[in-house]
Length: 245
Image 1 (spheres, rainbow, N blue to C red):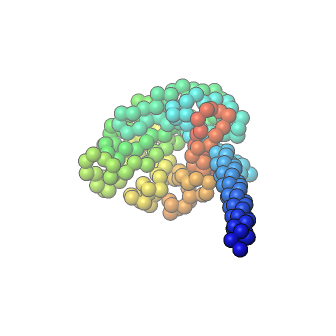
Image 2: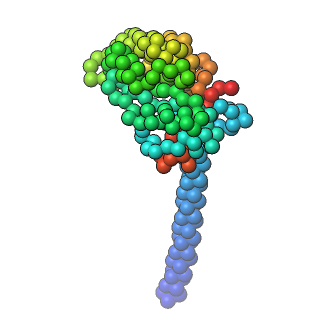
Image 3: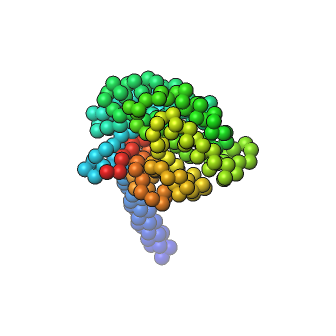
């Protein structure tokens, strides 16, 4: 009896091992398929742009962090305009702005300039930084003010009222230089913190990955639809922007 039980136990162990091997192979296959699907979704997201039939007016946001950019290639990809990062706060400037401005115009693109608002410093220094970089040129698109940083990150205590007041001052100063109304480009966190879209009546430029944004509480004019679009125009991804038709 003992002799017959041992082979039976061996056969049972072999069957169990085969079942485990098949289960492991199935698991490996599932993981591999998930990895392939994830890679496909990632690549599709990197190259996604809104439908041109719905949003015919499309363009890009470009700064020195993108490295060398071919604006002629951007135009060939369907861009009609480009916004260029120009200044940031009271002291930082995009060193490539003058070269980008000349190259974008030569490529036949409409061009606008963007200032990044710093809630930690007064508006006077920020507007001075902007006007020393961006020429007074009515041929430019309306200037935009990007708002992403919060006062909670400032080294000192900056109240909500102070942020709103300095931003309004900056809006007036940049508009005086440009001769046209600015476009406000708050992030969702900034809008949640300060309600700028509800307090300052200017056109809105909102950001949301792959889906139309609604956090402004009113219709937007511009939308950053893909913040990291891979294109043949350069080695680094860039933000792709559309205009509300």
